[in-house]
Length: 168
Image (cartoon, rainbow, N blue to C red; front, side, top):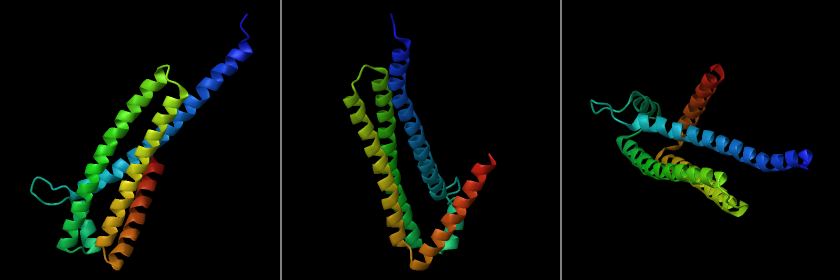
């Protein structure tokens, strides 16, 4: 005879960690998507339209920060380097997620899953470090006055994004 109470407890013990992993993975993916969206927003600022001019966002930002042409070129180069690293990490994360899904569906042991999870954590840390190092590199190009103005503009932008999220 099957002890139903033991069976239910066993199923719960197996599924709860999987659910927790799914929630964490979803949250990390959400954070990753926000970071990617921020990176994409900056990329759109830097891209040129069909007439060879920068997008309005970058022009507005440069006017507000009063960047010199040299500063503008340096920042664009920093962003390009960062974008290449971010795209590589994004692809690695996508591949890692697929591998984790495959392992979760297989009879892989907990050690393999833990190793895969550590790899995911490492990739997320690398992406975070890339964003931070990019910010530091851009910061080094700016004057103290421009840094203060940039901090203010970032806060304004965050406030607008927060308002939009709360509306929807």
